[in-house]
Image (cartoon, rainbow, N blue to C red; front, side, top):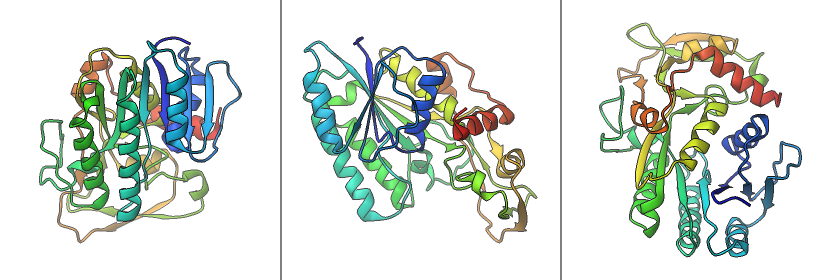
Length: 293
């Protein structure tokens, strides 16, 4: 096996499954280990892909212990769920602490911790948020993500850690999740005082997978934080139209700012790639992944 193999933790979820699909569709050469508590294999057996089901900690320890002393790994931690349930969030934090304890005892090359734009949701500023904005969250989910970020940055692994704050992932967020099963359902979309629907920073699962693998392979990303999404934000109404979903609009009584967008210039510069993707391309990528074609 080559140096710099990737270990994907929490691989049975939406993003983990998209990474599986991406590496087979575009024939990635690195060795990949997918670890999850539940079985969710979506691709054919491949010589450079390994699946590990069951206890995340035991499987991670086994992989690291069986590797040669000079073997180093890139670890992408996807473990988590979008919830405000404090008990579930505490369990996720506890598991992540255990993962870091295992990692700190091995010659790990890099850790990518997947965080969320929710760490910013308590700020008054909502447009073009960048990484220098001091994060503040009002909900349990965002607070938990911040707890994990701070714990990672204060741990011995911080010299080789990269935190990725995701915007909305097409096909995985609350607006577009299970969109193929929603063709006959009519969604209700809020329209605000300016006559527009909410605006968000989106990314599709295939471009996200490419970004994460590219970041993982980059050298000298020490103690880094990046917002992740496409350079151009989109109105939710545009997204629903592009997915050809039925919807009705209603005017919202909410006087707050309905915009919540990320500045991803730092990420674009780091990976040397223009992250401006048009919505049609991202919709097609999402449908391609959902249909496994």
